[in-house]
Image 1 (tube, rainbow, N blue to C red):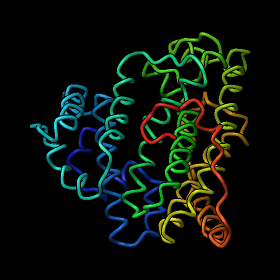
Image 2: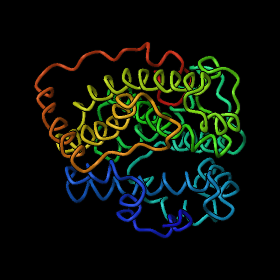
Image 3: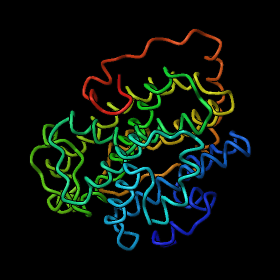
Image 4: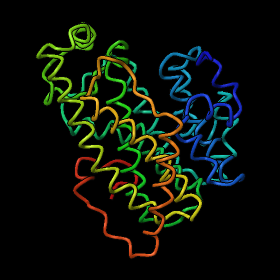
Length: 306
């Protein structure tokens, strides 16, 4: 299915087409909450497709939507008009949506991340923000849950970056920090992929390993914070996170072969992850720990970061 159709898809169809891990986990949410989560996913997906140029005049429309959010929905953009009621009824914070849009707009030019600080702030903007928005959609009014929601979003985005190293390079983007892999350009990464046994290819493998090791720190925190969610939401988000985390585990077990393209999880792996996702629900019985503030040291100043 061509991405240009994403704006015309129903929320359920958008989730089934593009968000397979969460679509798998949605069955644990129930009808009402599952529908709301799918609506949010579709909104974020269309914004992402606009940024990638998969929708006509996408980047220009992102600026219009951003401006419309700042001006109390005074806009003629059909996407924001369509979602205004959902945003207001779910009390989705506009500053967080704007931060998401800013992250997506940052992908419009050649992306060359310099260091871990830039990497984590990017991950917050394009994924940690979605975690914050999802708290509202999942009827979680525990303010302490936001820290963990940010962490889970960051963890999944780090996995996404490790999965798509070659694909991103083909689009002129290098999210691997220069401080990890050197000043290698996206074009060079594409060329290096043709020589997987070379030292430069192995250096990028080490960068992939660092991405996934960093992701593990944020998964550990994010999964702990799921205990703040209502029971069914806890189950669904835990399952979705473990299914997505499995991509990184498979990548690690295969020796970080970024040059082979995307890694996927099979149905049997999703079933196993679902079992473990449900198994860890017992943690709801215990007192929630204190969030590790060190995980947000580089995020200070961003919306909803303490």
